[in-house]
Image (cartoon, rainbow, N blue to C red; front, side):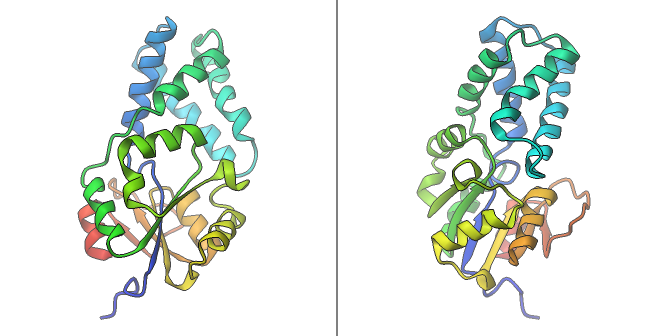
Length: 228
């Protein structure tokens, strides 16, 4: 039986939740920021931040809020709910600096990206904050195995918007028929791939099915490398 991914030549690769363990990095950066700014927070405060943060990024994906507003509003909302931080602007500045230092690979991802780079053109596609993502990519060594980076902040559109992918294909000259996006988010990566008219693979260690569905799902980087 023919593998529908046999013709792939270009990989669009999400970072957070796919290559990097973003939640581990986020948690580490959050508590380090609390310590540096003299705030006080426990696990309950962190979990509240995590939920607030997710809700704001979903708004960003839907085009309901600008990233420049998102990064401060999430901490203002956290203060309303939990009493910290005292100054969302000062806290955000510290948090972004410390988040940019976090590059915790998901198990198998580092070797997996190296493997993909030996077979395909690999481009990073991310909605993250530009300077933070660039710091993480550089520090992690990812830039050695990728052919380019596309960040929504520079593109002017974000995943899953079709315009984001139109920009990527215009710049790379890649053929959509031989391209695939790999990512963990159904609403951002998979919907984005559908909007762009390309193949989709969801990185889904949890095994929880969510719409929109990808052309294929993998639970680990070992599975991903076998697929591709």
